[in-house]
Amino acid sequence: MEPGSGLPNVHVDDVVVPARRGHVPVFPGDDTPLVAGHAMGEDQMADVPPVEGDDYADDFAPEETATALPPDDPDDATAIRRLKYRYLRTLDTKSWDEFAETLIPEATATYSEYLQFESRDAFLAFLRNTLGPHVITEHRCDHPEIDIDGDTATGTWYLADTVIIPEHNMCLRGAAFYTDHYVRCDDGHWRIAHTGYERTYEVVLSLSDLPSLRVTASRWGMIAQENHISSVRRDPGPEAESA
Image (cartoon, rainbow, N blue to C red; front, side):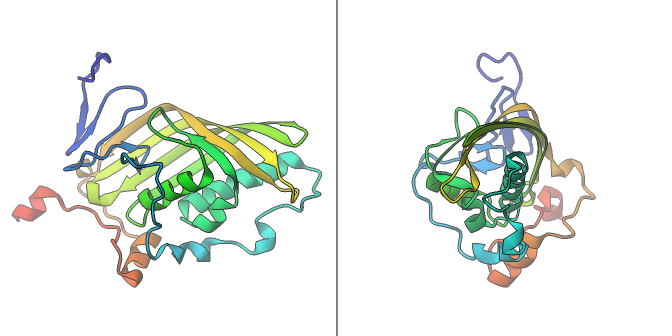
């Protein structure tokens, strides 16, 4: 049981999920915590070198004219919505250079007491290092509540997300409310100054409970083969090893 929680730990294969708010699942055979699909080490705030071969996401970027509204567009709420959509798209397609353009250099991010970042570079280095081609993510946001005050704004978004890590037989599902702070920059475009969310729920499922499940299509698996890096594959489990 988790100390002070009164609830038993949940075991998903060898992934231990403490039953408490803001829990930190742990990879099997590793002491590295996992929060919402992000593996966190002691040096999470240190500069982490980018994963080699992570330029493969450029194909996902739309034409340059479609990525942002003109600086003088009067509909600031529309510009902020497009900014958030671009943030989500570039996160899930691992288009890290374009992702960086959605945040100001001093941007902060808070996802729990375990995951707090004080700059865009620290946040981006962490994501590059932990959300490589072996991790499949899906982030969807809707129901925006946007309040604009001159050149600053706040936004609340309802998040539904899925994280799949086939080689660890793990699937995470959850929902949360994002709270973002935005600023209008000197070039007239809105960017994120702070982002973070508070979970409404989070569950972890072992893919071993779904013996028929197969990863039949994955952009990251194909790219992995082309670039000779870790591919997206499912751990066959102990039954296959003993066969």
